[in-house]
Image (cartoon, rainbow, N blue to C red; front, side, top):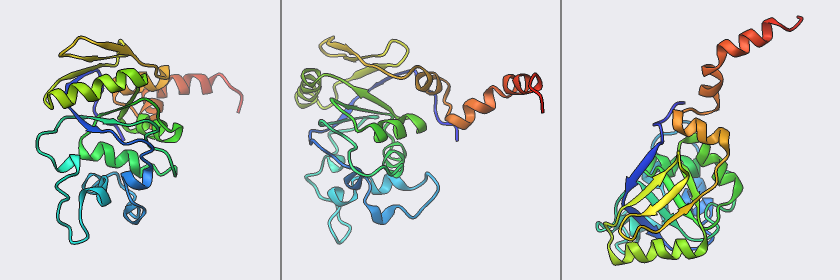
Length: 198
């Protein structure tokens, strides 16, 4: 399934300064029955966002109207726990295109990269700077530049580089998942196969 191309994202950010956020907190297990990547955003952080009667918990950041944007900023060790792809689907379906943290669980990171969410891993000091910038001004803008692999706090100019696998970077720039990538090189695959004995 193709997704939006990721190039340069300029956006405000939603702060979630909690460490060790696991995939069951991102999307509780009872919402994993669906097989399509649709509707999961409604249940992103479900148990943190809503009371048992379905009313919003006013003190949770996603219910606070002063915060918005396409960037989610999490604490250290974001996406730990089980390997469910649905956690990344929920982040994407809610509208986030980038998650910033000082450390990601490997499986969650890869699941994000497979569906068009860019996980940006920064140093602990830079993450603190990001949280402080949002606290000072919830509308502060960040620039996530995938071609240059940098994230910038626009209000201060502070910038840090991040690493990304070259193949995953190319796919994000083109809006490809793994199947789209293979379909895009069908001619090369056919040519390669034609030179091989049956």
